Length: 376
Image (cartoon, rainbow, N blue to C red):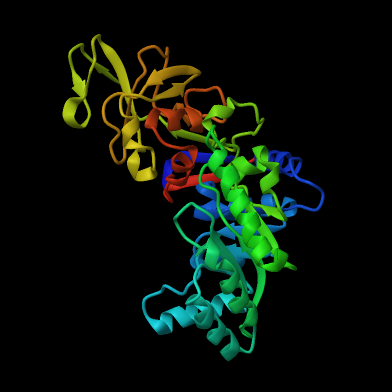
């Protein structure tokens, strides 16, 4: 545990975001909160009780994540986007599938070959495995090819060890300004539903965060917002018009302040040179805690309300700050590294822009050494 660095996670922000997302839905549309990657780095242990009252289902990526969430006491249905069928050893695979069945975790079927594997284990347990079939409507990543979906749905329905309860796909470009391909995917999904005789009795779901807010035609029976639950806009062109509240504030503490003369360089590779006598201090965190190395010489922090530059390379365990413009800066002062204010250069979106990446990467990289606390 890195006692110098604290991630403050706002319960009221997450609650507000879920209420806002609920407001985008029709009264019969369910909300499945995607809490994969430990709630996108925010901490499932902290947030499960905050999220559950405003969600109808939870979703994660890996079987192990699903088991962890179930062990935390989740009472909502849990969907695992990946089944345990690809585990290497057959005995290990069957054991993992059995645990998912025993915990009534919903498994995803992405190919016909998974059906007998899951079905056989379920029949051996004397139970049915609850499954959703995932269809590839054009993203080209995973799922049953669209024109084969009706046959796979039929096979899953006919397997006595399975209880098919859902049909879904995933959008590739809903967060882009040009959503023409997303509209095509919605149309493909509609065709698949029709070919499955309307997918009667199945929960049909497609929408991610961006589509939940901006593509109501993609809502079907359920939506699956992820990063928006935690207050971040995956669609850069939105310009803040969706009033989500960022849930994360990341802080550290200054180590002793040092005086350096002009002309001294700092950090690995000596990539920054001080052009004046400067007061500098380190914060004991870095890419080992998930603070992106590509933010070297680009990002800023805040000390006593003053923006200060991060100088030199971000190393595994240390950041170097120039605190010359902060009167009285001293060891132990709080340093804000990530701000919950949308307009701040240290917002998750702001850091993502500097790094040339997306908000999801900024938050999900935050490591296990970081202390996480729930605040209002």
